[in-house]
Length: 308
Ligand code: NCD
Image 1 (cartoon, helix red, strand yellow):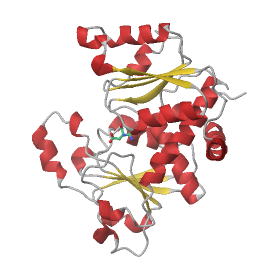
Image 2 (cartoon, protein in one colour):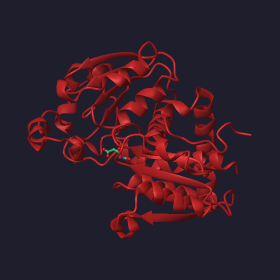
Image 3 (cartoon, protein in one colour):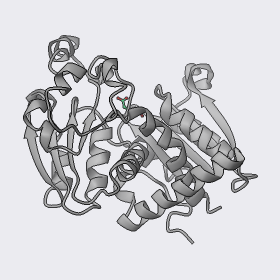
Image 4 (cartoon, protein in one colour):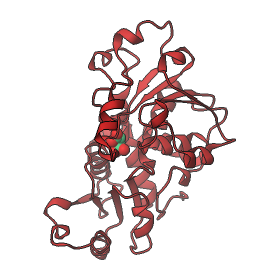
């Protein structure tokens, strides 16, 4: 039986190397089965609650698709029409949802460590669907799964992570997950003000090789993967700082075509202005495949956590 049965998934560090390879293989198998049969019957009789206290498209919907594809059912808690509007706390809300006995709860919150805080108040396993600027472990799962599919390996990969490395939560989780592989090199590419946080560096120190650079042009031809992220506008306390940094980087087709060798291009999405739509039909553009991979890898994760 899998080591993830009944486990809370709060951090990318909750996955060991062997868990990751097992999930990748399972995701590939589920993809084929889903293509053949549409809806499977592994999770019949199981219920998943999605409790998102912050906006989401891909994470929530791909979890819902994943659960339905497994044959399970989904209850979506919608904040805007809930008793939170009457002043109920989010902690009480979580207790109530858990009291209805779901088999798993996926939670997203703007406060870092919210899932860690509520995990002991609830019986169901909690999956972190993004907690403020802290982490987004299942995004890292689909990111690394995409790298593994596209490049055929993760060991030895050279990746440039570009954009808002300070506030973007996909960056810590992806960096942490890459420590489970050998000989990984990360170039953190951003204006100095948006560089990756010290607490993140501390956790990867000695486990990957990393460099901090300001311009993607300087490292482009060394990269196997360029991982672009948006400026996290909602997390800037000073709107003027957002405006000032806004123009500081953008990936466009004309800029890419100057290079002899191009990496695959990934993005957790949503993109705003940092990744031009004229890149979309380059063969290296993988972000829509990446988003789609989210359904299969989340189905694999749910299957293991549910123990079905
Ligand atoms: C990311 C998130 O929510 O952190 N989105 C996602 O889940 N794909 C990235 C972002 O919002 O920039």
